Length: 364
Image (cartoon, rainbow, N blue to C red; front, top):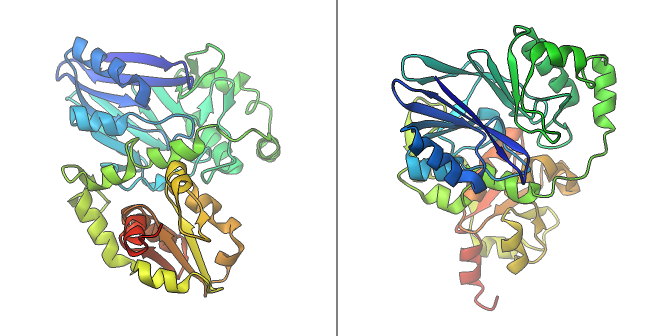
């Protein structure tokens, strides 16, 4: 077996490399984009072939290296099915197994609470907890579908049911700690060792933490495995599983989704801009929006759309039309499918995106 723990100073992220030395197959957990050369050098030094790049969740404090690792090393990316990272190769579910050669198996444990799609992974006697369980702490629960009660249940009912000697390897540490154990966290973790479920919920709901500095950049990027969203969608050589048992290219995935949603042309959008029953939402990146945008559009970047859309009062009326647009119409198609799945009835994607809008409005 092979195991390494790596540390990114800027985000205090802990990354893990696991390998079966007989087959030379390796997996990496929570890689950071800025550290990609470190990972590639390490793998090359030991003659390892990267098979999986796995995420414990869609991170808000750094951009993942998973997409670039897939491009450069032809590995498979894995993200929880609950993260809405549709272009990840593997939509991870509870008890999914990732095999390295004949000897090593990493198993997924669904641990929602920090975010709706948080996952932990167990390999041998080592538990990789992401931001769900930290050493002497736990992840915050105030964004990305987080829920304090759910996190308490994930930790106390799932993680704390593992053997006491299980080693805990967190996704972050800010105080120089690198490893703990289930027994140590049961006995000494100040957020969990003395609080009841109700006390834990009250404490977590009153932390009043500042917004993560990179959240508006990192979350949208990480839903596309850390690479540009339109580039990810248009990368037709990437195979994608969407829990149908079939493998689709990214272009096929977008084409399929477009048959399941409603699209609207830029000219029709223009004619509807002043209607009271229309909510136009720009889901592009902040730098794209700041450069130019459609008048009267609300700005909700793709990465926070589902979590902030209810802040727009008009969407509460099911008769109102929600129109989404991005640069090319691909991201907005995926977002429209996501909102429809959430229960919104009248969701449309502007075909061709802002590029098509500019063509029909050359004065912009």
